[in-house]
Image 1 (cartoon, helix red, strand yellow):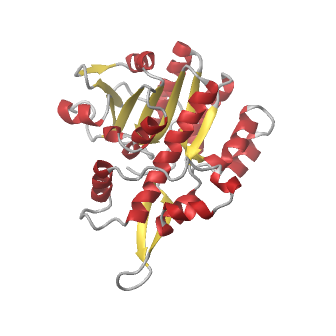
Image 2 (cartoon, helix red, strand yellow; image 1 turned 60 degrees about the horizontal axis):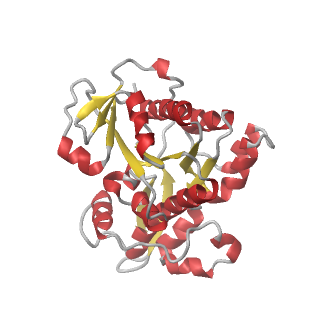
Image 3 (cartoon, rainbow, N blue to C red; image 1 turned 45 degrees about the vertical axis):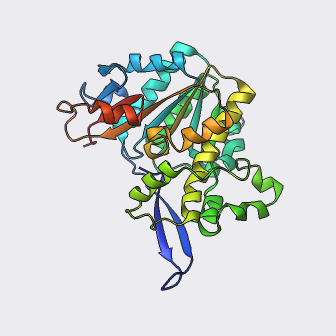
Length: 306
């Protein structure tokens, strides 16, 4: 689902403005290594080939892409272990693999770089970078893997204060910010006219075509535009062999959202996307190939953490 739960609160009893509240939807489950998992805690499917594959075979996707999008469920502890193992496999396979994260906002890039470069201790990094509640168990293993191999990590998400501003006043409000603030944002105006994505967003928010205001949808698109632009800018500047980007699956399912935004900035960039979800019975899961192919290049299913 979405990076945040979005709750719309009417500011008047009828026809008034809408306030946007951003509430982090992360749970702090704990798994520390692949050894914590039973063999059937997850399964991976190559949707085009219509077959089950191994994690090592999933890493083969890097041979055909400059970016791999991993669409996660934010509270899926087993999924987070799969991500960490995939990143380690990509590092071993391709060497130069940058990590890009929805979980850090662009105004924290300096602090993140200072930590990766060894200028500040982890306690200061944690204090000043506003990590998600489950950072230690979910994302720290990836950041530390990048740090250990001298790889760069991209803080890809727009600062939430600006997302909230757009949700209240549309993206036109961003033009009134000073140049220093706008440096944390994608080029303005950002694209927010994707009808297919809007329809899916409306369904996620509860249905009907009038349930989502233009400002509210633009706030969602700002997340996507920020992530797409930061990925593109990082690739253009540093030319890594590969970028692994993590975000909530809603942002990249059906190759919409963040992927669509990236294609606007880097029209020739190549990518693969992974969509993950939890299922009650991993062993009994039967692939729905047509739906899975429409959603992503690869599907990862995991059991709910117990």
